[in-house]
Length: 119
Image 1 (tube, one colour):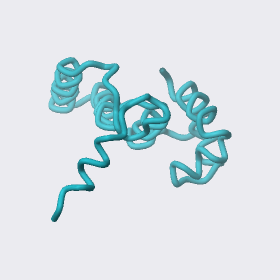
Image 2 (cartoon, one colour; image 1 turned 30 degrees about the vertical axis):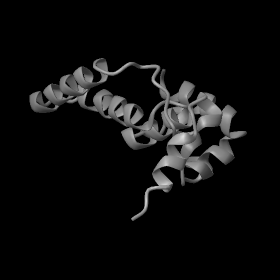
Image 3 (tube, one colour; image 1 turned 45 degrees about the vertical axis):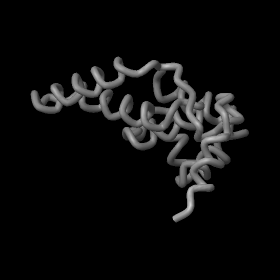
């Protein structure tokens, strides 16, 4: 999915591009520039967009980092991208995340167990 598609899909979930920009802690014009391709969209923003779409945040950020490293001219960064791809291949893509149960249908019991642990 390219940046424009990511932004459009995430804006639909958020309710609008303005609401999505607020959710991502950025100005709406910045998001629009990213969507139009006049401003680069770094791996952090792409990871946040994927997380809004319901993807597991860990997988979302690793995928975005691998995409950036894969395009590098440096051999060590390309090797790092291959390592990230190997890690991603080891875990199912459709695994549910407890971060947003409304979006992905994950159980919310994980929160109760964690919060009930006395410290």
